[in-house]
Image 1 (tube, one colour):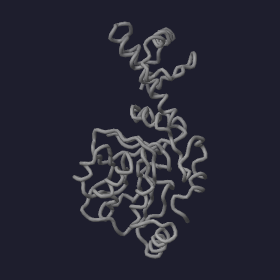
Image 2: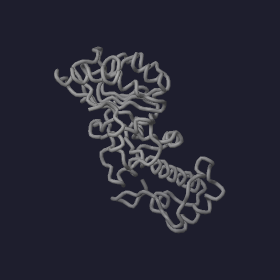
Image 3: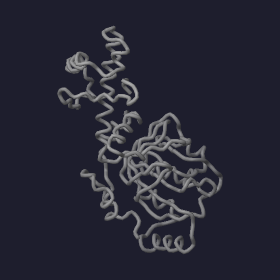
Image 4: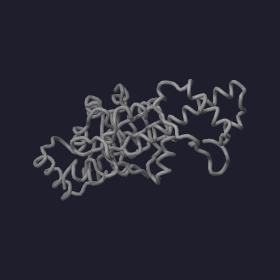
Length: 295
């Protein structure tokens, strides 16, 4: 086996047709990442669910800091409980054959590029499961990483808290160092609780939890969210003007309201939404299955 293997990554991400990094990892554009900052997690989840991606969300996190949204391209790592023969073989292979330095956890960090998020499955280990502390977290920030998603623990909480422009999702903290674990893969499929993350997925993290967005669906998530947001701008304005009541706006819109929205868009669409294309006659409102209300 090889770490961070281009052939494996290409095989595992066939739906992505855009730009890739040198190692084959899908590289969603900076523009999409910027737009994703304004996408609500529920809006993106609706797109993924509609395409049958039902295992992309994980909640139950501790977050540093709690008030920032995390968006970036996933770099994944998988660690397992230590077994001496496997551990010694892989550590020696990585150091001697691939020229990697130090212990396993630093190997993933050294692959990060600006805009990346490190996503690590360490089987929810906290004691001796502190994947990163102050030093390695600062190394992530120094490489332009946007954050870390750790299905395990951290140490040096106060030092991590003091790092600007980085978000850390983690399961718990402990003063112990990392130990009794082995890295079995870099940029491989990664299980995070009940969710799966692939290399190059767009990570969307909010106070509600983490959503791993397949790269080929990232732009659709942005477009769907932006359409909803523009509809809401129109909706709130018309309610305040007394043109429609809350029931009319909170239900599937009538043809009359849709026509009004179409006319309103011509002169009232903000610049950040002017790239949107609207199919004539289409209604992309998302409604509840159990009630005729707009979500």
